[in-house]
Image (tube, helix red, strand yellow):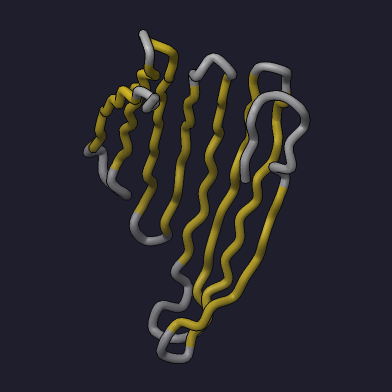
Length: 135
């Protein structure tokens, strides 16, 4: 859901679903977006998610996690998150970025890093784009 700064958004939502997992299993999954802060120039919201398999050879497989997201009207944004996968371990992630006017265009820079589940190894990426509107 979109949780942008300004007037109070419709970013509070949740859903729960069930899918079939072959053979003879089902996965129950869900997520929720929860507004934490909504100001005229910034916003923050949390996300919770999880899933669990019932029946079949993957019965008991489970994942739970959450994220905290921040966005400011000046273009700064960031997030941190953690997920636990039963039998595999934890993974963590973080990202940050920003964008702003530069000459006739907009410069956006950002990056993120995450750990591989159950490992202390970190992987990440950094990127930048510059866009100029056509006349």
